[in-house]
Length: 118
Image 1 (cartoon, rainbow, N blue to C red):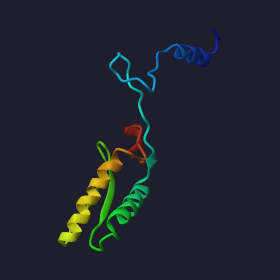
Image 2 (image 1 turned 45 degrees about the horizontal axis):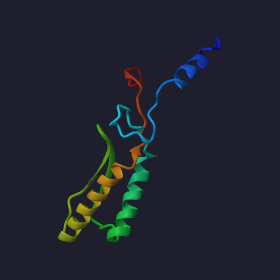
Image 3 (image 1 turned 90 degrees about the vertical axis):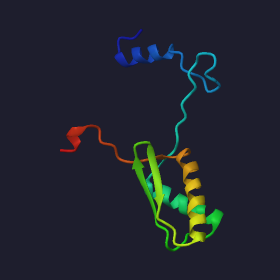
Image 4 (image 1 turned 180 degrees about the vertical axis):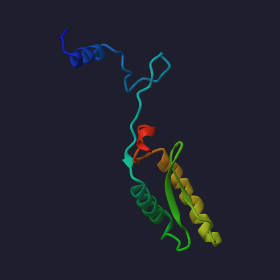
């Protein structure tokens, strides 16, 4: 073992039983974590509008889309529809947003502690 701390840590981790990608969790192993791609709020907004336009036609003029960080990662909100057609578009887009929340994480600045606030 080397006298350098970093090498010791590396060697200690080399013997640690990391879970494999094939692990199911039934044999006592922990399943491997997956990493979702990070997107900014603007990127997510553009992706939602583009995909909704591809699936359901052009974005209705009266609807406004907001993408923001929440306690569970990110979410999006769409303004109230003015017509029955806009309501259909809104409901389908909210379903699309639910799917995208499982695929992407929000790349938002994070404060490391209270000292950054003051």
